[in-house]
Length: 175
Image (cartoon, rainbow, N blue to C red; front, side, top):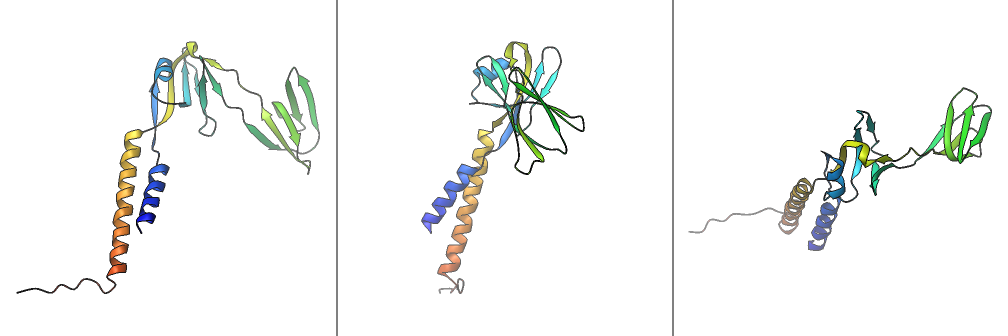
């Protein structure tokens, strides 16, 4: 029983990570305590706002913010017009949609295009005014881990009492 409780405590404490959104300047990100912060929004000095998705957040490398490249698949019907512009393929569908990608393939059944989308240019930190990041909230993660651990201990103790005393407690007064 103790081994099971210890395993559950380890499992709970390693799996609870509460995240919070933190706003700061680019200097806060470079000199901050967060390791590899996940960038979700950038406000440029020009006033432009750039949003990143939760699935593909931005990241800092050197003095630039990069966007992760991602794969995209598109269903199509009919013929594709494919041309190459430097290292980038330009793909046009019959319906008029245009895609730019670094590489592509057509699935075996011939109706789906899978491509690695064209990377967006990196954003120099010198042009960034404010950055929003997703970071682990250490205090809330610790509090939730402790509460979950206490819950596991109380549940385990209750189960143990019911196993040891299946008929319940009998109180016999002495005197």
